[in-house]
Image 1 (cartoon, helix red, strand yellow):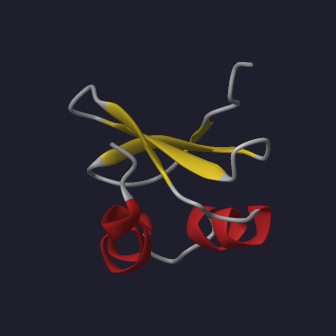
Image 2 (cartoon, one colour):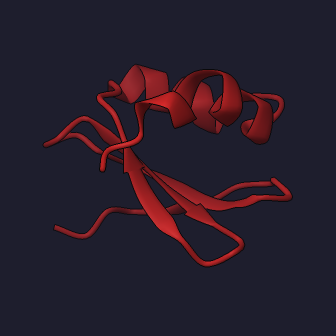
Length: 68
């Protein structure tokens, strides 16, 4: 299943998406990489997507849950 990626206003992050079947957030970086993080609910994803600073929210709440 393709994940709908939503463009965001960030100097490092190009787009974000949420996969409800796995409760993962997918982050696409301007540098070209795309990585999953989780688990995160849809509500947590919306909080991330609508944050005043996508980058700050990512560093404080998302990146430590990288899926390898």
